[in-house]
Length: 425
Image (cartoon, rainbow, N blue to C red):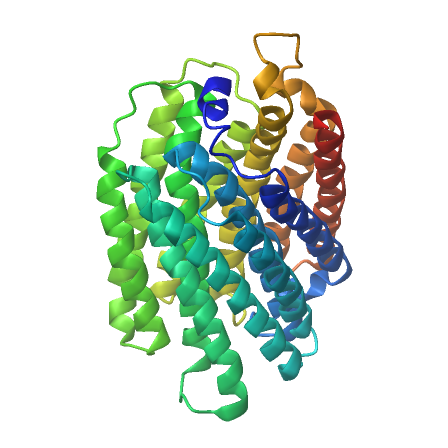
């Protein structure tokens, strides 16, 4: 595994490029946990509410997308063997994105439209820079592998979801698009959560999971088939929601999307069963549990499309359960788990990679404080189901307990990543 990552030291970007995104994401997750602990009642309300929108965008923009961009700037040169096309431009693009994401997320707290417009415009600028840099980088790849194809699809959805968000904010002021608000919000969330973040995770996992688990000769045929299925289901369902299309069309599209998730889960479990490394580390243990949350969110999505959750739960509660299981359970747990692997390898490669084999250097795992990593893992695996149970039964004290556990997990996670940075320096 070390060889796989260190072969590309000559194409790897400056350490500051991925780290500024990744550690901003760590700070974003810590902030998210603090806000959630203080405002857990928001999770028992309706999803189209200012405080819920703040929590959602803290997760998606300040944490998840920030981490994803940092990981892409490090992993694209490693996985595809090409240097980042314009590191200086990528470095500059961080600032409008970071300032804009935080401004936009906090602007939702009181639904301050000028703050949303300014924040959204800065986010759009930062994302445009990232897309230009990554597009130029990917264009130089002689032959795209499966991971590269997933990355391209995910980046297209990233651009679409950000542009759509800006349109929503401006439309709030100018009212030029007579859009149905709730279905369009669902379509927007689908493009971000599934089109952008899930497809990115799926694509990268076809490279990282076999590497981390030591699984050789991976058959990628299901991954190739699934890329087509995802790219049929996601835009079709999103467009149906955005245009408030016929209700009868949503269920078959949701079933197609659930089928794609099911195929992916089966494929990842097959890869993990064939691994040579018998003991799973934090990253793969978290990922294995996250696959369960992906399955849960796929089932909840089908039930939502069929209208079965709204019949049995308070208004909007089914959508909140779906979002929490997908965002926190699937995407959040996966990202935090994988960062326990990516950040140490990143620092090890830059600090010790050239010395490996010529002098004594620490092992990659020695850069991680194992006790703090375990504490983060168990706190997350307490907080996520606690919030789910609290939302399902309308129990404020359980939801609050889950929010507090998530806040503590964020603090421990931040201290773990800072200790990795210190040991790797």
